[in-house]
Amino acid sequence: MSKIYVIIPAFNEENGVGQVLQEIPARLVDEVVVVNNGSTDKTEIISRENGATVLHEATPGYGRACLKGIEYIKDIANKPDVIIFLDADHSDYPEEITQLIQPILDNQADLVIGSRALGNKEKGSMTPQQIFGNWLATRLLKLLYKVRFTDLGPFRAIRFDKLLELDMEDKTYGWTVEMQLKAAKKGLKCVEIPVRYRKRIGVSKISGTVKGTVMAGYKILFTIFKYL
Image 1 (cartoon, rainbow, N blue to C red):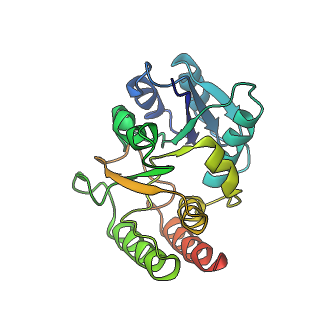
Image 2: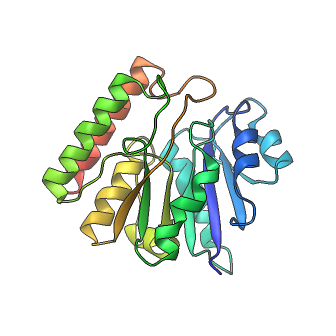
């Protein structure tokens, strides 16, 4: 049976992380790792209360938090087969992990992206700039890297050995697109499945501010052209 780990980056997500952890299918997942990315609220306490392993990454950065989780898992004697990345804000549906990992378990994929574009989005769950940014980024990926995606959704699953082969580097907003373009360059089998998406709990640190939106857009475009 495949060994499955979940990595959840979290910055001040005390209102959402508990629900996320409670909704993860316990029968499928061997360990959930919450990377507390400099939170000043009760994110750590609530995560521990709900059975997660909590790591600390004081320096802000989504990619940096993901890298912290990977480093922890690399030191485990019995390595997992599959890694799932999931946000802590309750915008995704953790119970859909079952569908997310199935293409990997069926040996039909190395990387599975949960696509919000293909699934059902709650009205207002994504800002217009997020929708446009995803459209632009995926079109550029198709043009420059000859790979077809519809979304840069953070809810994703990947074989652990393939993840290590990607040698991920980005420490902030370019994490998701870096993974997808590197997977394409290395010839990994990539598929998308439709996932549901709802309004997050709390305000987004990226799309919820003008600065965050601009910085994220810049970093995504910079990353796309960086690896040509």
